[in-house]
Image: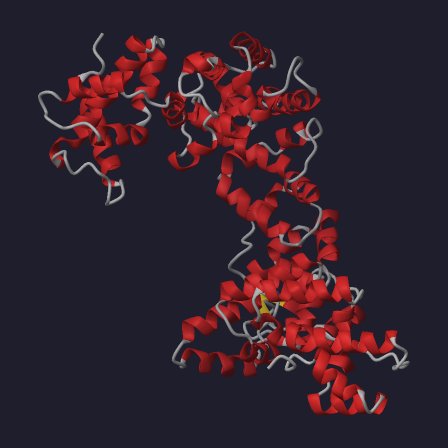
Length: 561
């Protein structure tokens, strides 16, 4: 049986040339003339196929799949065989006979697992399929049903237990899926998107059954399946789109009807487009399942431009029906959010105003069209002259791009186009990505979004510290001082002081004085830390004339200098 046709050889040589060009520059194929490298790889692939089939007794189809799809694993043995165009094929065959290869390494690359990840999947102390034939048998059953061999890695990475199953059990389970009125190709697309349905033991399972109930409703009852091209890639793509809604937390078995009625979502929008729209609402930090239901119930939202439009914060709130008194309260409490911003930043604008739940509630209660029909009332609405002047200064400075990126970070967390934002900008240092990392660190520590934005408006230098330093200060506040994060609302500057040279020694000195009955007055943390060194020592002297000496000898960070 010929290994490949002439046409296939030509196309494969072209493909292999591209693969070879992507190898690292230090790849040790220099012993093979560049014009022969593609041919050498092709010969090695044929020899590897023959080795698996003739020497290792694998079915030819399996051997061919592995031989064709394990380019990077082949590279190492190729580099160890002396090259001569006339004898390379036989030399490589001889090398394989006398230098056993790890067959699982070649298999895992052939099913589509990235070469850099393969080591994490290799079974310990096993080199040959004869030592554990379950993986290959399972792959054969899946391939026989129609799964593309080079996509089986998707299943293995997500649900490795699939490849421990008996091949007959796998085949029976796949046929059960077809009983829902689905074709082989549609079942394959579903399994690639939801690998868990092939895992487990025995019966289908409640979760898998609920999923297939939904998918039958969508693909069969609402006939979405007739609009999908009959190939694996098309079905895998549309199933990934459907999976987005389950990933948001929508309950399996409960949304089939809803997805069916909104089936055009999965035909008209790309997966990337759906991800962008869901991410917009996820940034509101509301219940994710509610986001999925909102988009299914109001699919027209997906057609709204949620990135480019400019908004006036107060104008937008008025457009959504926020009352006059509440609007005044918002303007008084969050002046740094006022002015203009981009629609793309709206979720964090709402969180900075602590109105994200209110806004999402308005969306769910039938007011979602207000998001799509909002426009500025007039071209000059909410333009801030001081902000414009500050922006012009930035644009004429020596490093405009760096500063604009920092400004965009502030707009991204909800700060509007206003003078207060410009003042905060003057005090924050670092790249936009560093500032975002520090901001996220404090969010993950438990600070509320709106309160953190308020803290930054008062003490912008909070963001000038590395995340690990911020974490240590927060941990000390909670674990040793026994205070809650709410204390930072009244004393955000706590995070600006040096932990080892200021906060710890002064706090521990006061604790010692209190424990030994020398200080009965309950000083606030701010008065302990923010006081100058001279005033702090004067206070200690007022407590007892000997205490300053004790401070310098036992607590002061200068004691060891």
